[in-house]
Image 1 (spheres, one colour):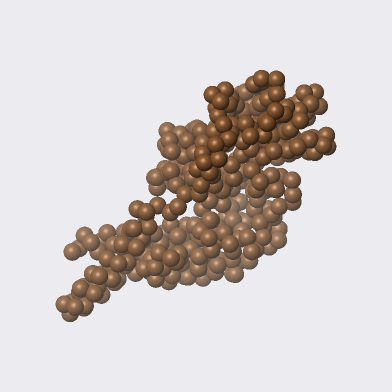
Image 2: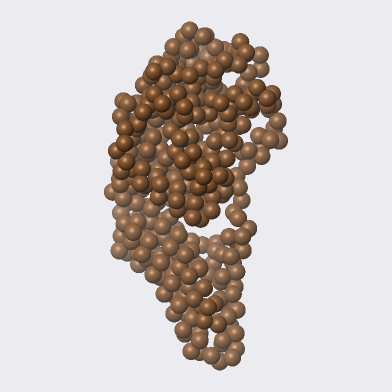
Length: 384
C-alpha cells in the first residue's frame, strides 16, 4: 500500500496519508530520509500538535471552563469524530495522527524545521457548526452515533488512496449540510495551501497531510494562491452568535413578560396562572427529560428542571451550566476519567466516563431548556 505523492516543482512535495494506517507512518519516515527536505509541514494546528506531542489530558479546571464558556457541544463533536478515528486507528495498531507525529519526530531528529499548516480545530468546528441548520446538526450527530455500531470492514488501501477519515466522514454529510462540508474541506484546503506557500520561501518543503486534501491543496497552489493576510484572517475568524437565534432568545422572555404584564393590568389572574403553568411545565419537562437521557444524577435532573424556567428568561444564563456543575460535584470525574476521556474509542463510553457524562448533561440540558422554552411559548401564543 503506497502513499500518494504529488510533486509541485522541485521544491514542494505533498505526501498523502491515511490517519490510521501503519504504512503512512513508514512512508513519512522514508520520505524525510530519502527526499531530504529543508522544512517539514504537517496538517496540524497548535492544539492538535500539543495533544500528539505531549501527554495532554482534560483537567478539572478545563472541564469547568468548557461548561462555563458553552463549548460542551463542540468538545463532544470533536470527540465523536476522534473516537471513530481512534477506533479504526487501533485496528491498524496506530493511534490517529501517528503519521503526523512520525513526521514531527523524524524532522526534529534530523534538525529540520517543523511548520504547522492547519487551522485551529476549534475554529474549524465553530465555523462548521455555525453553517449547519438545527436539523443538520441532529443528523450529523445521529450519523456518527449510528456509525459506532457499524462493523463493516474499512478498506484502508482505498482510504489511503482517496481520502482521510475526517474528509470521508464529512463528505457523507455534504449533501446534508453543504455549508459544513465547505468549512471542513474546502476552507481547510485553501488555508493549508496558503500556509504552505508561506512556508516555502525558496526552501524545499515536504508536506504531510491527509490524502483527502491532496487534490484541493494542489489545485490552490497551482492557481498561484498567495499568503494574503486579510484572507487568512477571514478564514481564521471565529463566528459570532447568530443574530436570529439571539433575537429569538431575548424576544421570548420579553414577549412573555409583556403578556403576563398585560394580563395583570387587566386583572386576569386565571390567564396568568394558566400561561405560567405552560411556561414552567414546558421548561421543566424538556430540560429534565434530556438531562436524564444524558445519564444525569437525579439531583442534576432536579437542578435542570428548576433552573430551566428561570434561565430561559435570561439568555445570558444556561440551565446546562447548573446541571453540568451539579453533575460534576455529585459524580466528580477521577483523574483516570479525565485522562481517558480524550482516548475514548466507543461512543457508548461517553455515558460511562464521568467527564463525558458531565459534557452530555451540560449539552442536552441546554438543548432541552431551549426546546422547552420554544414549545411553551408556542402553546401560549396559540392560546391567545
